[in-house]
Length: 282
Ligand SMILES: C[S@@+](CC[C@H](N)C(=O)[O-])C[C@H]1O[C@@H](n2cnc3c(N)ncnc32)[C@H](O)[C@@H]1O
View 1 (cartoon, rainbow, N blue to C red):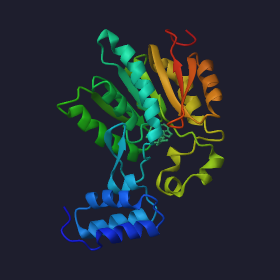
View 2: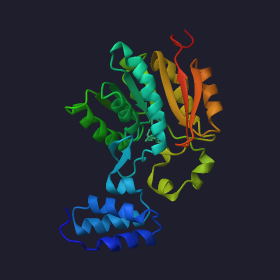
View 3: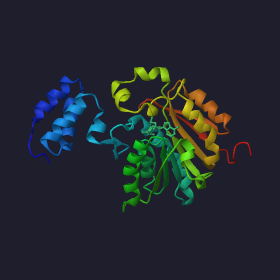
View 4: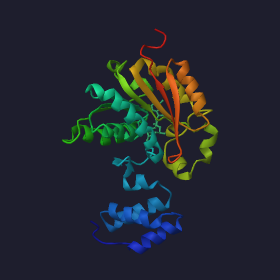
């Protein structure tokens, strides 16, 4: 509850509109709800007017019906990734048919939103392991996943690790993943300059830059994924439409059975690679 208004509600809308915020009324309502004092409201409005993503300013994002904590400097989960989540939940439900809690790995987890949303889609009956290279993302993911793991309602067990792709994970997870999500950066280096300023200025380059053709991190993930997937488990990654055939080829080269799925409503493309039932090359 705000103690005193330094700027009133109409002034908040006007300030946001003059800064170019298209949804000034909606954003003002969220900032007004987030501020606990007039001074804090001033500060939040100025951060937003300066171009910081709304989710980082208010400290949370809505994703797949969940309220996800978003710390400053951490990648804001994109709503189009709800398509990847819906595909993953469908595959995980099949794996859960024998009564087991599916094991989910969320690599390049950022806030942890995707892994958490898959676990929520399984009514919390999941074993979730998330990891990221960026310590700020790891701290944020812990703020999201640890309460979900300790909550009374959920039965999710959750762990968050820091490190480069699979190097972050305990060796005991090898060969066990039913669902392996890797929503890594996939913007080609040359296109990063054309991203909206909100992303360029407030999300770390390591979260955006996917290398020369955008697939550098994802190719590494595909190459090592078979060793971490359970027989019949699936790797899921997001790419652009244009990158999807190349990504599917990388999965096939690693010994996975690839498929490309698109959703026009979300404008999203997901490439899946199913483990055939034995470790590639064995
Ligand atoms: C596009 S963001 C996606 C975050 C999250 N998966 C989501 O969808 O909201 C990519 C994330 O990958 C992480 N990342 C980039 N390279 C990585 C690597 N080699 N190993 C682990 N994480 C990495 C970044 O720190 C960033 O959090």
